[in-house]
Each structure stands twice: as structure tokens, then as C-alpha cells.
Image (tube, rainbow, N blue to C red; front, side):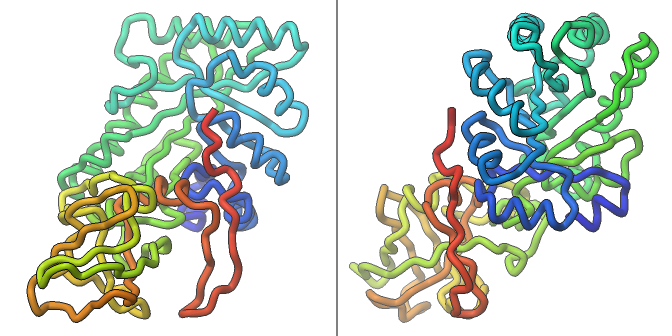
Length: 350
């Protein structure tokens, strides 16, 4: 991802919510990333403590965290996004009182309809201009997330989504610049669309996160193969109550209850690789339901000889959630554990 970003002239700022690990963030920075992206102030605090010095909060951060944000600004280059004028004005007041200047970007809704200003509204340019003029704020540019890419139905659909995102941002940026407001950064973020976005003009930064591990959703979307998936769950068969059912010790507290997405979607809550030395799924095994501590797997009678005590490897539907459900990731090569990697920002959701 870093090589692709660099070749396209993009700054890569990976979203660290995927791994929540300063160790992995350091690998990304050493490979050439300009900084990291996080969602919550508590995550930023963990990474700042670990020495990461350029952090972007790609989230509508509430001003209730103001004292913590000001404290972080003493240690790192911090930026955040806004999409509401009242919130921007409150941040302005905070920064004026603290005698600081906060870097801000405006979140733009490019079709996911979650956060962000509507770029098609008549006062979109005026909104940007008013935020840019607020004291205590240093306007950097615009930021988006094409989350609708996770519902893409084909490769062509992914390309269309990336192109529309870029075109939407270019149009807004052009109008803002024409109004006399300089725009330095145009930031996009989505693993499925990353390779497409790198072909688009006018963008300066990419913030993909999931690529660091990949998962079954990315396989379904065509962003990765099963062998590209670096995060797997090692689970143990704990019960085989019938010829067509077995149970693993990896329930919703391990795998999460997220469904897989994408046009090539597979049934269940992850794919089971019964030979732990080979990342090859067995389509006769389907994780059909989860309890907190149990994964109930349907199996075709006679298709597998798995018995209690046997171990399997599971490629989860959503790696970002799975990483947040464990204290430690284990870096392995073959069957050898190279090192334990603390998930230091796990649960840091405030």
C-alpha cells in the first residue's frame, strides 16, 4: 500500500483503528507513512504516548474532550475534522482561550450518508469559508470516506464509487479555491477503493486501514485473496455433538457478530481453514451462528474428521473489530511465535 501510494504521489496516513497497536503503527511509519489516523481521542493518547507525532482524528470529535485535545497538541501535530458550524465555533473558542491553533479539515459526505457536509448544498462553499475564517483554527482542506464501497456489487462499481468521490471533492475544492480560500489537503480513506483512488487527480492523501490485515470482506470485494489475510483466529474444537455440527471456542466475543459484505459474500461469520499450516478454507464448514463463547459450525456429514481438541484457523469477516476484542496479537512465522504485539489502544473509545 505504501509503495502504491508513493508511486501515485499520495501521502499515506493509515487508519490505526484496524490494529490499535503502536508497534504496527511504527512499521507503517518506518515504511513511509506521514502519520496515522484514529477515531477517538483516547486512541490518539495511546499512540502519542508511544511516540507517534502526527495524528489525525477523522471523526467528529466532541468539544467535551477539549482539555485532552489541547494536552495532545503539546506533544503531537494533531488535526481533526468538523462538519457542523456550531462545533467548529466551539473549537475556535477553545483554541483562542488556549492560545493555540488547531489544524482542521471539513468532512464531506461523498455518498455514504453518515457524517459530513452535503457538497451539493447551496451554501457548501460559504460553510467552508466561514470555518476557514474562524480564529484559532487553521483550515487544511477536506476529508471523505466512501464507506459505500463496502456495499459494491462489482469491480466496476468500486471504480465508479472512487471516481465519484474524487469528482465530488474536486468540484468542491475548485469552488472553494475560486472563492479565495486555499485548500492544501484532499484526503480520502477506504481500503476497497484505494487502488482506484490512486489513479485520480487532485487528491493528496489516502487513509486506508483494513489493508494492514485484510479480512473476508476484502476477499469478497476483490481487494485481497485469502492468502493475503494476515489476521486469523486460532480456535479449538470443543464439542462435536452430532455428525453435522461441531463447536469452536471462538464466539461473538472473539470473532464479532459482523456479517461479511461484498458481491462474493460467503455464508457465516468467517471462513474455517481446518489445516492450520495451510490457509485454505473448507467450504463444507460454515460458522452458522455465534454465542458469546461458542461458534456453531455446520458440516457436511463425513466431510471432516475434526474432533474435540483439534485446532482450526479462522479468517474473520471484519479484522478491525477482531483486533479490538483481544489484548494481544501474536506475530507468527509458520508455527513459531516471533513476538507478542500488545493491542495497546484496545477499548479506547472515548
